Image 1: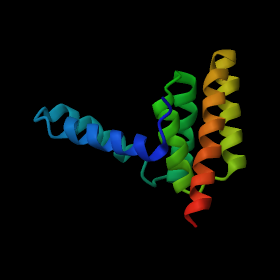
Image 2: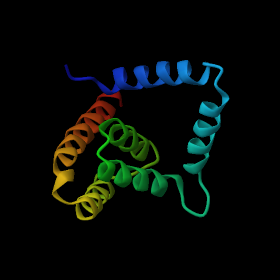
Image 3: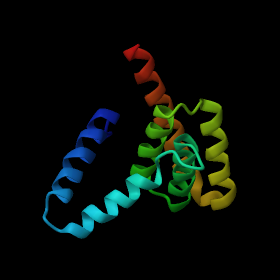
Image 4: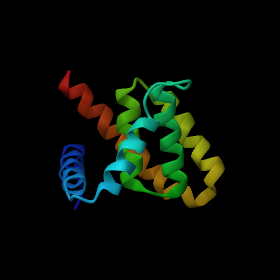
Length: 119
């Protein structure tokens, strides 16, 4: 069964809330560190999200790929910037990245179509 971006975001939010409200403080520390890593600094947030996308593709995590594509677009990334990021992941990770490149291309089209329909 295919999950929509809206369903993915809801599931992610619900489970993050469950994790962060579990009472185990080390989870909260990690999440805070992760969030801080992607804010503007010497590198802008968009660049950091694209870097996270490349790493996610090389590490072959589709949930992470979807998250970082969405966040990159929210930070202003263009289709061409995303394509170049996909290409870096392919070069770094090799042919094992191809199934995740397919996933990324599908998700990118769906996110951009969804955003266009919302306008």
